[in-house]
Image (cartoon, rainbow, N blue to C red; front, side, top):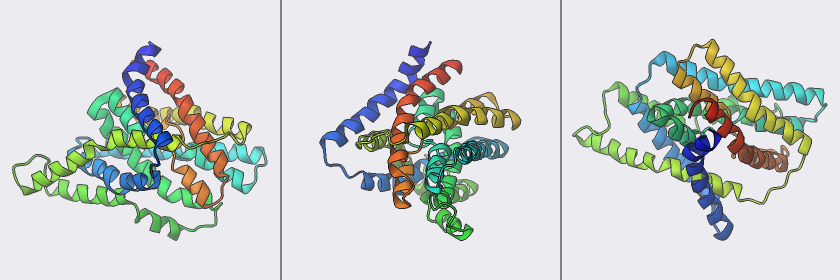
Length: 306
């Protein structure tokens, strides 16, 4: 039933997000500093420790990553065609691409996958998120600048990403045989990182609530409707097709569809502000897509049998 799916998976998330929202409304909290804490410590720790622990075949890792790429690029292609048809200017087209291509697969998607599918689901959601994070840190620059950047800018951006180094370090330690909980100094150090990683999911949800607490108005109802429709409806359909094409197993298929159904990533507002790509429209789309996702995700989880 719909109510069961909401209570079991989404209600705990709403509770934590609401706490973050309330704190931001009544306390002068610096969300920019908290976002940096997430980007440079908590999220890399979560990625690092789960790659060391992960028990997924290499082929599945590649296929899950490819679905993430397909959901991103496929959504962008639909948005680009619609923007051209509606004769949108460069800034509006860039803003629509930011809204539709990049989903909140981190601070919303990871906890949702964890509640819905447990540790095995979280592992697969992390793979989707890592691919999404790489694209978000590279393609957004070119999109927000309306094509004025080059491949060198994107490449430099990749190597500024903390998750990249977390992935490389974790793969190296995994190859050398290090394990979390081993009775030695290295095992104890990994236990410390594991402890830090355990704080990541609730922190990300509280941060999402704080980010949503900003006063935001809907600037362009028509374009917002189009963007939110692509993000919440078209994107998961693309993921369904890609998962079937790549022959993912049932659990991985459910996880990638869930991740592709997430609302617009909150950090797209920062890119739109920096490059003047209609930030008010992007911010409004983040809020609308996040609120409506409670309905669409509840329906999706019910269809999945949660």
